[in-house]
Image 1 (cartoon, rainbow, N blue to C red):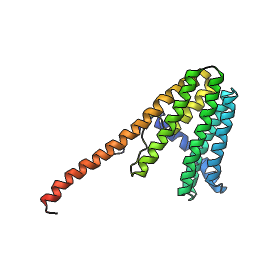
Image 2 (cartoon, rainbow, N blue to C red):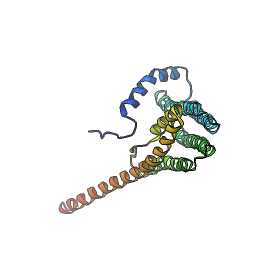
Image 3 (tube, rainbow, N blue to C red):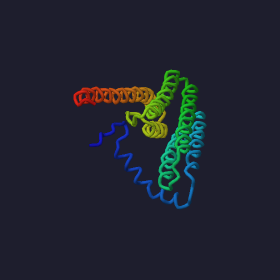
Image 4 (cartoon, rainbow, N blue to C red):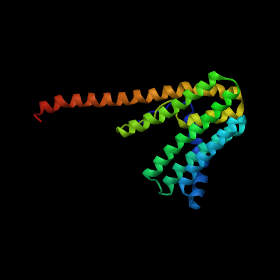
Length: 218
């Protein structure tokens, strides 16, 4: 039985959105648009969002954050559906996603500095650190041979909450930044704990096998 994935963005919303854009993905594949186009476009849109955040236009900043997030979904889906998946493509996507988040947080940080809000400016820094650590822990865990797609505040959740928070109101964005700063770092520790538990189970299984091997004379 598959273990249910717990996040702060309900699974039915994520699956519903994926079904909604499925025809768009088919159309893009028919036009032979390379997935790398959307990977790079996502980075560009995040850079544009940073500009709008820094200049105080939160609604436009939020809109471009969401558009960049959509591009991040499209590139992987298009790559798999068109048979263009590659190790380099996965590396490029993951790397540019990190730059995209740095741009986004930079713009938001400048906004709160200009608003004379040092506390939330510091939380933007912690949110960025937590976001990067969530991705790093997963990459390191997978390099060690463990699946690590767990945690409350993963990239889709961060993009959706920050994007809509910025569109709705400055106060909501501020609350979201504090939430992301706390939950992103919590998620990084969740993933570390997840790997620790997996390794512990492996060692327990090995210890149970050793007496059995000895009794069989192996």
